[in-house]
Length: 178
Picture 1 (spheres, rainbow, N blue to C red):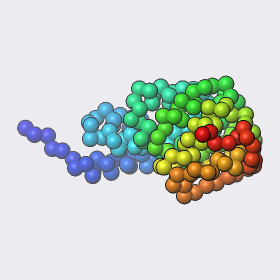
Picture 2: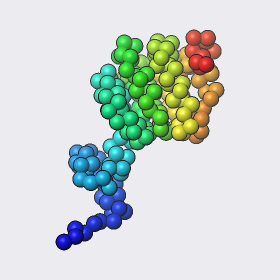
Picture 3: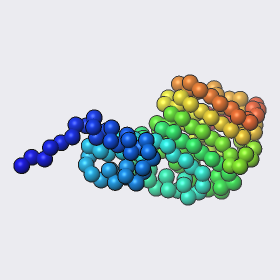
Picture 4: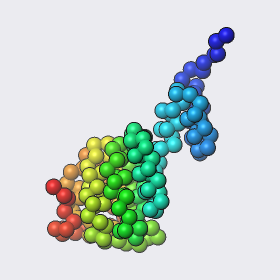
């Protein structure tokens, strides 16, 4: 006896509906059902990533080290930096692994305005690399002081740029790395 098979279009519609109602538990379970479900489930489960603590950065690093192919699904990244970034060296590693970012939002927690130079150099270098990704179309930077003018020298295919409560400066320590 053969088991009837749903067309892929119907499977995709069902998975899309689960994503629309934000049922991440059901999406995670669907990953285990069949190989035909994996792409669409991953597309929804990993599309939006928020990095807002050492734990979230470390968890993301662990996930990407375990399966680097997941970075292709991670297209909307929100980095909410705070003092944890100054002492946690995981963020540059995570940024290095993100290769398909379409939208990057980078801001501070609680409306705190942070000088660009307070970020560790390796974090600044990796952010500049992400700014230059050919996949990046939307960039939002909020609450950053003395962002170097040169940050925009090599945008890839950027369509939208939002600088909110950002001051620009032409400082040698903020230049784009070679």
